Length: 324
Image 1 (tube, rainbow, N blue to C red):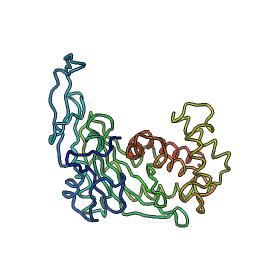
Image 2: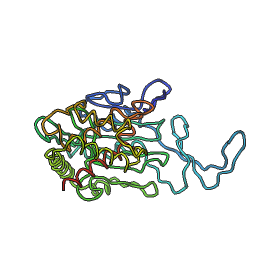
Image 3: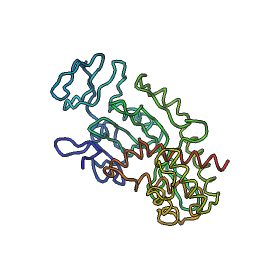
Image 4: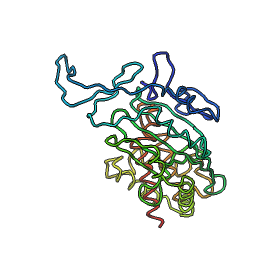
């Protein structure tokens, strides 16, 4: 199957990382502290998005007129990325990594991974904010900042705080508290202004602390298997992940409950077993590691940027509403 991570003609992939290999071994390994310029090249984000007016396109050998549309294409190989309106505001691949330059130089951030997906239609950067804490016992959480965008209009330019649960490499949005706190989206109808986004995000470490407070609350709430099952069913149906009214009979529900009841990584840890924190992490682990997808890379893309990310965020928010 086709890789989600962009593969160049020379066989290399547009992805760079430090430490544990993400995206299943594809890309270039960098050392901690590598410069942003090094990241831009290693992650394959050293090309630009060009645009051109569109007059016609070929549909089954028939030329169809396309008024008032622009074609976006890669500067290095002329690959068509998308057809957009003249008002579409482009964010260049290297701008994503430039966003992190002063954060890494002055604020103690460290780049973790970056790259492009689907031939360059989407691209992202993820940096550690240098914060780590335990929910309870040895259940460690690390804080990150994610910036992602698209060249085809499929994703607004999104900056958000994210956490990774070390024991299972699960990713959870750290956008807690006020609505959309810790997450800033810029439509492609507006110009992306990095300094404004950083200001709107607020205090990084404050967001991480808020998340840890919320996670610890969930770890104190005991739930029975029946209550967990009802919660999972509600989350899956309310997010339209499943259409069936009989949620417990679906593959997704069964898989999540198996993770909750002991199959999940860290499921038997104190504060996880039989708690709402355990339920939330079972849903997260399912999305990140077990949900059906074309490839494992497609699953990771969905977990970071797509419906999987939305499902995880909804599950966390819904859990917090129940424990208030």
